[in-house]
Image 1 (cartoon, rainbow, N blue to C red):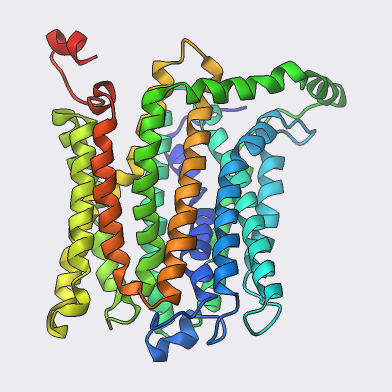
Image 2: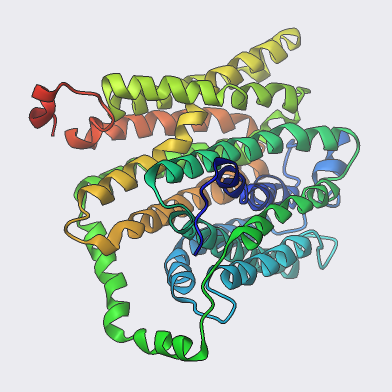
Length: 454
């Protein structure tokens, strides 16, 4: 495979996932919520814009279970899909066909998700949307796993890989900013959320960038046949060995427990903030933009803190800052209306310090643990990310499919930010179970302190 050497081309390649990530955000944060009206979730004049048809289209209790199952399955399929994309051999190459196999059905599932089979909350409708959600998450996972798998293949040195990864992180902030800033603007202009979802569909064309830039080896029939023969029982068992190897890493398992609680809070925030603001008469774009705009600066501040105090202190600070901002935001319903907008903007700016750092945390720990144990098992590096993805999917299922649905159908949506704050504080408390070696990650130490720190 030809390598990318120009910085401009590397940056362009790092932007390829933006559109697909955006569609995933639309589905998880807006379309799933639009299927249930709930109690006092939206202002009366907005119900027709934020929902499909002014009424529930799924049975809430059944949907809560099925949507949670879909998210858990999304985490489970990382392993087989990773094996598939790594071992695919065709006369058209390896990564491009895998991208195509994932992207086309994903777009089809996205479009079909906009079309209910019936006009009311029925079992058929609920099963239909649950099936489409599984299809969308599965094909989205295959698409993005394949794209991520090309990162180490398209660059030839560590500096270029860092540039590529940083570009992807910035794009993560961009698509979330677009989601929280522009979607409410379009809805405010009188567009139904389904129309808004269609407006963002062309962004998926960014995934054509790998198709145009990848120069892959094309396999002959003989090479394809030999590749199939190599998939023997011994190689398949290596996957299970990697899983067992990763689960024997006790510090990492402790981290996954901390991450599980933290991610529940973050996912509840991302999935429920739209409904939370719906009855406050606040401009969501005006309120949410300050939480993402300062992210590049806040990431720099977080990194400086980590260099001085280590990962443990920095991580606890971002959790407590985020908890404070969410707790303060919980006062929106009780303060004078004249002060709600500036107060909400203040809370949004406050939480921006943590949002930027949350993106980097989930890359830092698995990479450092994998590097630390690489000499013991060089084939287990990707397994750290796969297992973490499973834990993240399970926590997201509880937060956005169970907790948020319960809040909506019971009229408790105003408690969303308070629950987010509680979960962040709980994660901070759990972080004290982490070993010292993990808490000191990233800390700049004098040469004489190195042995003691380790």
